[in-house]
Image (tube, rainbow, N blue to C red):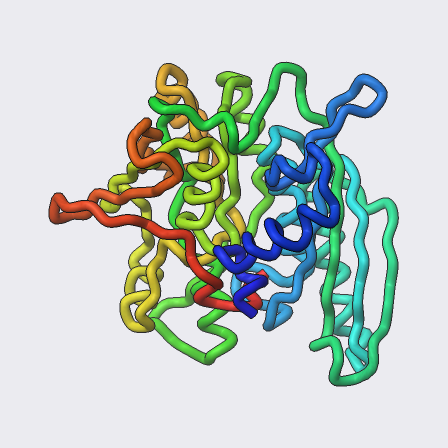
Length: 329
């Protein structure tokens, strides 16, 4: 299970099994999506699979996730999703009424994101072999001229901005799966981020890095960027926006909010001269209203993420080994 968690064990699979088998310049870029040139146009292309349990949760469903996860991966290249594919793997015995609810949620999420589902596939596996419904979605979108967003562009001096409160999705899934109550309902932040990214690009096309911190949370995303660019990242722990209900849940369960998954947030590395204007644009958008500067990119400790604590000390924020909460997307 740890190999599917988006942490160090996942990275080992990619490095030692998939990259040697597939190879190629595009595969080595290791972004959320691939940037491709086709007939003079620059396309972003991404694929993702969703195995979340339960299928419905506060704030969304596997149908919403299947769209928003892929749409957001495209947005992290600066592209607005245009077309999606959708593959369903269904377990024998799943009620058609339940499947209808999932499909309806998926279609509504696609329309809300401005994308169209244009092709798909369906497979059925024997009872006991599929856990209800699994979904794979792929998507393509156009990258605007002059936009070059990728992890390798992070540079010392960049300001690190997160678009809002972290940890909501992972805690929402855990609360319904395990029947836990924290005094208030925790809702997933599941959302399509294309509009927010467009608002940021309207300020400047020179955004260096965008990443949506899903599996492995904010900590995994920051580590992946630091490693890809060979730079250090210094964050101010107190500046990271953690909602009270997430902080309380993590304290009870011994979890670190930095490692808890999100499905409607992004982290951006922005040149310092544009940071103030980009932050203002993010805060003017509904999905970035609580955006905050949490740190900066530094030449020290390349490949590492370091947090300055509330007590004035520092700690290394490692890449997680596996995942604190499996099956969250």
